[in-house]
Amino acid sequence: MAGGGLLITGGLVVDPAAGRADRMELLLHDGTIAQIGAPGTIDRAGAAVHDATDRLVLPGFVNTHTHGHANLMKGVADRWTLEASLTNGPWLGGARDPDTMYLSTLLGAADMVSKGCTACFDLVYEFPRPTAAGFAAVARAYADVGMRAVLAPMIADRSLFHAVPGLLAALPPELRDTVGRFALGGGDETIAAVESIMAERSKLPEGISVAIAPTIPHHCSEHFLRQCVDIADRYNLRIHMHIAESRLQVLAAHKLYGASPVEYLDRLGVLRPGFVAAHAIWLDDKDLDLLATANAGVAHVPASNLRLGSGIAQIRPMLDRGITVGLATDGANSSDALNMLLATRLASYLSRAFASPRNRWLTAAEAVRLATRGGADLLGLPRGGRIEQGAIADFVFLDLNNIDFVPLTDPINQIVTCADSACVTDVMVNGRFVMQDRRIGPINMADLRERVRGAVERLRTTITDARALAARLEPQVVAFAESLLGEPMGIERLIASSCG
Ligand SMILES: [Zn+2]
Image (cartoon, rainbow, N blue to C red; front, side, top):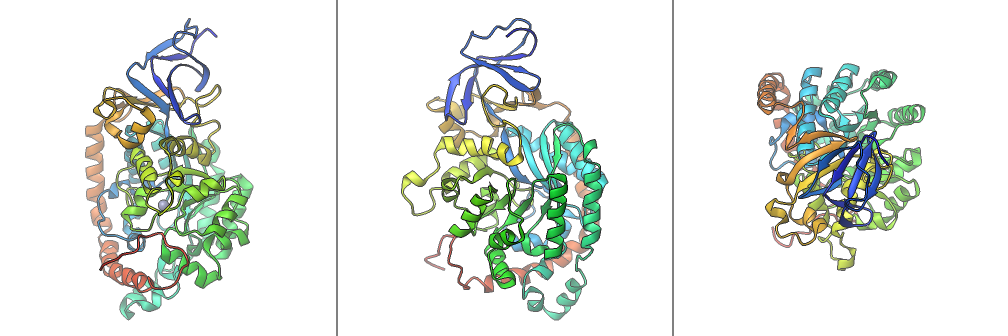
C-alpha cells in the first residue's frame, strides 16, 4: 500500500488478544490501522513516519466508569464508606455551572490522557437534574483534549435517605425533618431534561456519544426506571448502573424487592446487551448467570472499591461465563487519581485475594486485555483495543528507557507489575497525537492549575451549607450501615477480621 497515512516504525507492539509483544510497523489511515507488518516490510512511500524505537505501543486504556463532575474533589475523603460518600454527594457534585463542569471534566480528561487513557465512560451528574448546557460543556471538554467518551446523564428520583429502607427513621428527629424535605421528586422533570439532551445528541462533537445512567436501582422508582429504559430503547442507548457496590445496597434490594438488585433489574427487563454493571461486587452465581444470559457487561473498579471499603469484586467467575469485563478508575470523589495503570495492577493482584487455586488468578495478559479490549467492547467502540487491520488507531506509547522497563524481561508483565504514569510519553486517538512528548496539545498546565484553584475557591463558598449538613449526617448514616453488618448475606466480599 502506498500514498499518505502515518507509519509507526520501530515500536514493540502489544497485541492484547494474543497476549504478546513483537516488533511491528503499523500504517495508519483515516484513524484506523490500514496495515501491519514486520519491520521494514511496509511501503512507506508518501507516508509520514513516526519513530517509536524504545517505545512499547499498545491500544489505549479505556476507563469504563468515571465521573467528570467530581475531579475538583481530589483528596477530600479519607475514611469514607460508599454511604458516607453518597451522603456528601450534594456538595461533592452539586453547585456546578457549565463552566465549572467543563473545567472539572477537562482536568479529568487531562489526568486520564497523561496516564495513557484514550476513551472513557463518564456518568455525568448535575444536581438536582441534568441540563443540556452542562452536558454540552462536558462533551466539549473531552473533545478539546481529544479523548473519546460515552456520556451518560446519571439520574435518580430518590435521595439516599428515601431509597434505603429504615435510614430516615434511624436519624435523630431534627435531622430527619431536614432531610425529609430533600425528596428529589421531579422524576418527570428529570426525564424531560434527559429527553432534551437526547434531542441534541447529533450536535455532539466527533468521538462523543451518549448513554443513560439511572444511578442505583433502589434510588430509582420502578416508574422512573421504566422511563429510562424507554429512552434507551428509543435512542438505542447503553444503560450503565451502579450494581451491588456495597453490602447495604444488596440488603436494601432484598428488603424492597425480595430479590437481589440483578434479579430485580432482570424482572423489569433492564438487562440487555450493552448494559454495564459498575462495581458488581456483592453478586452471587445466579446474578452472574443473569448478567451472562443478558449479554451484559461489568465495569470493574478496584481502586474505588478498596478506597471506599466496599469489597473485592470476583472477576474470574464473570470471565468463566463470558461476561465482558472492562476496568475503571471511578471519579476523583471515590478514587482520587484517574489511573488506569493502577486499575490494571489492582485487578491483577486482587484476583489473588480469594482462597482459590492460582490458575483462577488473572494473568498479566488478561489484565491488559480487560484494560484495553474489554473496555472498548463495553463502550461499544468498533474494533477498539485491538491490533488488527481496520482497528481504531488509539494507542498509548510507553518509554522502554524508563526504569520500570529496565531490564526488559516481559513487556506485558511489566505493564502490570512495574509501569507507572511516568512511562507514558505519547497518546494517540483516532490516528492523531493528543499527547506528544508528555505535552497534551491544548492544555497549558500553569493556566489549568490557576483556573482549577479559582473554581475550587468559588465552590468552597457555594457548598458551605451542604457540606455542613453532610458532616452532621455522615456519622448517622455510617452507624446505620454498620448496624446491619450482622445481617446474613450468603456471600462475602470483604476479608473477615480475626481480631478487633
Ligand atoms: Zn460511579
